[in-house]
Image (cartoon, rainbow, N blue to C red; front, side, top):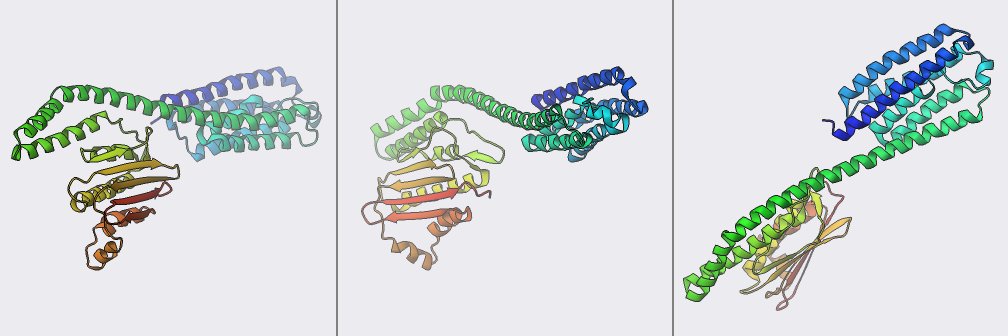
Length: 374
C-alpha cells in the first residue's frame, strides 16, 4: 500500500509530465511552419497527450511499485518521441539546433525510473534518453545537446538518491513514532505497577525476611520477582525492523537478584529467529549456573554489538569445573551444553567458547554473525 510519501512522489512525476507536455505542445505550435512533415509532429504530440493521461492513471494505481513493464513502455515511448524528430524536421533544422519534439517531456520516465528503482534506475533511464538524443543529432551534436545529456544522467541519479533518502527518513520516523508510543504506554503501565504490584512484592519480601522460616523463602522469591519486574518495566521498548528483533528486550527479563544483565543503550538487532535462539542459549547457560555453580552463585550477562557480529557473554562466580568434564558429559549422553547452547549457536553460524576451572567460575562466550539470516 502506498505511503503518503509515495503518493506525493508520483504526483510530482505526474505534474512534471503534464507541465512538460504543455511546454512541448507550445513549441510544436510555435514551430509548426518549420516542420517538413507537420503530420508527424502533430501525431507525436497527440501520442504524448494520450500517454500522459494513461501514465498518470497507471502510476497512481500501481504505486508504489509500478512494475517493470510499465516503466519499460514509458521509457520506450519517450525514446521513440525523441527519435521521431528526424521524421518531422530536416537535417538542416536539426543541425541548426532545433529542439526535439518532446523536449522536456522525455525526462518524465527518467524521473519515474528514479522514483521506482533508485539512483541506478534513474541513471539507466537517463542514459537511454540521452542515447536517443545523440542518435537524433549524430551528425552535428551541439554543446546544448551534451549539456542535456549530462543533465539527464545527473537528474536520474539525484532524483533516485533523494528518493532513497526520503524513504529511509520516513521509515526512521515511523519507527521513532512507534517507539514513542510504546514508551508512553510502558510509562503508564509502569506507574500503575509501581503503585500496586511492586509495592506488594516489596512488602512480602520484607515481611518474609522478618518472620523467617518458610516465609523467608517466600520473601526471597518475592524479592526476585520484584527485581525482575522492575527491570522489565524500566527496559526500553523493543525496536524492531521487518524480520528483526532487539536482543536486549529478550535478555532483560532474565535479570534477577542473582543475575545482572548489561547491554548497549541502542538496539541490538538480529533476525527474529536468531535473536530467539541466542536468548534460549543464554537461558540454558543461566540454568546451568543455577544447577551447577553452587549455592549463592551470581551470574552476569554482557551483550556487545560489534557491528558484523553480536557477542553475548554469560559469566558466573560459582564453583567452576575442569573443561574435560564437557567432553565426558557429551560422551556419556548428557548433551545439555552441547545441544542446548553450542548446537544453537553453531546453527546460527556462530562460535561458542567455554572457559572454566575449579573454584574460579565459568565464562560462556557466544558470538553470532549478523550475516546469518536464519
